[in-house]
Length: 244
Ligand SMILES: NC(=O)c1ccc[n+]([C@@H]2O[C@H](COP(=O)([O-])OP(=O)(O)OC[C@H]3O[C@@H](n4cnc5c(N)ncnc54)[C@H](O)[C@@H]3O)[C@@H](O)[C@H]2O)c1
Image (cartoon, rainbow, N blue to C red; front, top):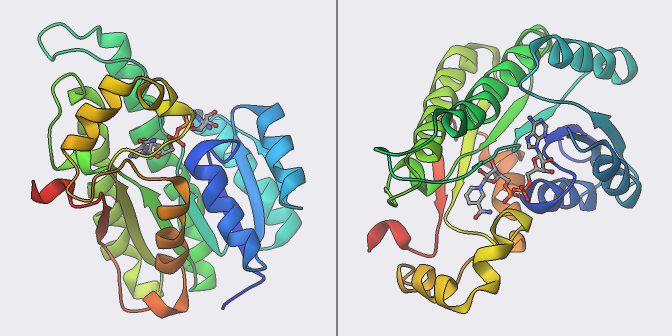
């Protein structure tokens, strides 16, 4: 199926999720903007002629109810983009406050897992569906102070592979995009600080932090029929950072 798909993007009120939802809507798909920021979800949904879905993806009961409501209204979810994620702070492993670890685990791992679980049965019944997760190259390359977050993204890559192998018999594909740093509200502080920005950019062979518009097309591609033989990959979009 090409355009006109029902596409649910988590964390789509702002940042990368908003850009991804925008890219799908631009191709004629219907974007469901799921976010725990209800006002932000309403704003983005209005811009995209889509639908807002206020939702905390770490809340199992809320996830079940939200997916049931979407299915009752639209009959199907063709594409799930598990984009919502948090960093929640930073610190060296030896010092990190365990609350920071727990907050990142709750959204990035538990939330991604719960959303995938909730769409799996309906997609299996339809024998159709695509899932795109948002990982990070941090899953493969450590940056001191980001270990808690990187561990959650390594888990996202593992969930991607599990989803891909378990749902392949039903014709369902699952892949991930794994960006390096991207300019979004999450990284605004970094981008506005010239020294911090230069330090990041020195690690990137292509020389610049990514814009959302350099990442969103890859999510669109992985969800498209052109990617029909691709499943289980986590595609680095990092200006070559993993090479350096
Ligand atoms: N910005 C980067 O440099 C970068 C790099 C690699 C990967 N990523 C990943 O991209 C994704 C999007 O990041 P971003 O930079 O756009 O961040 P952001 O903070 O700008 O946006 C994240 C969105 O997710 C929503 N959200 C957070 N927790 C949620 C929850 N429990 N339930 C529902 N919604 C929730 C927030 O309300 C927000 O709208 C994340 O998974 C992040 O880890 C970002």
